[in-house]
Image (tube, rainbow, N blue to C red; front, side):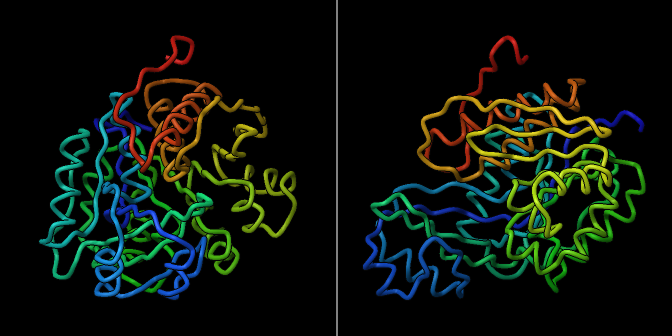
Length: 320
């Protein structure tokens, strides 16, 4: 593997995350399923936003979140996807500039993706989701992905009958060893439905990130059997175990990575920042276990505030 100029190139579905505090009655009145992603039209998302008290607004997406972790660790990260010529598109562009992420955003017809996170008094989160024009992205610059150590995407972005999925699959095939391919698994129900397709993509990947539910949904087996099976298919496998820490599997060797103490406020983006932290640590020459420790530390810092963001980051000396 040759040394590349850029550390990370991520592609995904750029969205803006809006946060609102609501009652359970609000969810019932608006026919929103609690603790789930409710996919609705753009006009409906806008109606729900207008009817809610928005308390925070942040740029989002799994790959963007991972790119921010890379950038906060002083790595060079890029992010690609479709946005619209609208307020949400402006927010995302300004965010990438502010956190030092190289932009390969394309302005296309239609609206930028928009998600409202409804927080009920019991701290549960429910979502109204419209991905806008992000699933129609197709202009990914192959030469830029090639000029990166890691090409990163998530299973959600590649599953479905849309142009973004086709674009990612084509890029994975065309990279052909020019960059390490990192895949994050997301959404156990979707993983279970698309097992065969995902196993094919994992066979083309070098690094896979998953939590224990995502991994067992993929194999249909217990956690230990799943670790053994998927660990044989990739160079590196990281399994996130929440408060129990995580596992890193490299060439048949499994290492336990302790969790870091945190005072959780919002779990949004913790896994994304874990992945980004791991990839940047690997890119800078850290071993696979230490890279997992750095990812774990960053994930713990992210959950201590509202939204998937990391305004400041100081690594403990023993991790740096």
